[in-house]
Image 1 (tube, chains in turn yellow, green, red):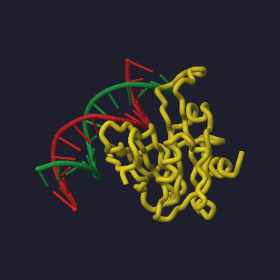
Image 2 (cartoon, helix red, strand yellow):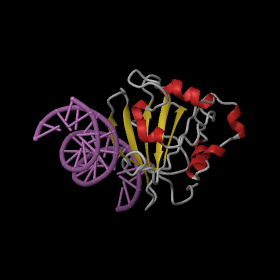
Image 3 (cartoon, protein in one colour):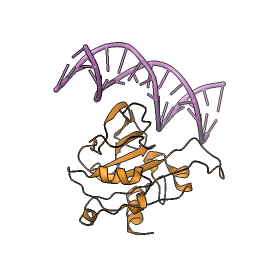
Image 4 (cartoon, rainbow, N blue to C red):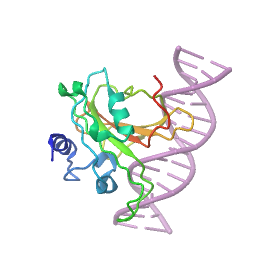
Amino acid sequence: MNDAETNLARSFSDDTHSGFEFPELDLSDEWMDDDLVSAVSGMNQSYGYQTSDVAAALFSGSSSSFSHPESQRTNASVAATATASANNQNKKEKKKVKERVAFKTRSEVEVLDDGFKWRKYGKKMVKNSPHPRNYYKCSVDSCPVKKRVERDRDDPSFVITTYEGSHNHSSMN
DNA sequence: CGGCTTTGACCAGCGC
DNA sequence: GCGCTGGTCAAAGCCG
């Protein structure tokens, strides 16, 4: 386990789960079954998010190559995992798990500007967290990308963002 | 007036 | 089969 993974594991270890999982995101098996493409540690934080960098890197499928020079001086812990699961019916082929990317950012606000425009379509209280989870869709027509955003259960200063799918267009900046 | 958020309802999957 | 939980829909309201 590299530093990022260790960090991640520590961050997400939970009383109901042990190990490297995202208990609050219901990402357990399928998430881990697939290849853990990458765990990225380090990224700008505060409110000048450079999330677009991460997002772009991840969406382009080269998450493992994400290494921003700036990310050296970081205080945010960002972990990313991409699940490209087209066909892993080796196990039990759950649902259509597309491409999922989750990362945890230290931020006060949950709507990080990642270069895309999002339309909120739902909000839910989740069981293991006192904080609601918000659901967003990319507002670009015919773009299937969704994301959900929630705060870390025991460290509300962190925001967990999970992207699902990949954009069929470039960012709208 | 158009686009977005809000919010409750609805639905589907899963475990018991 | 039932209840719980997570995910989505859609009507209504808000805001620029």
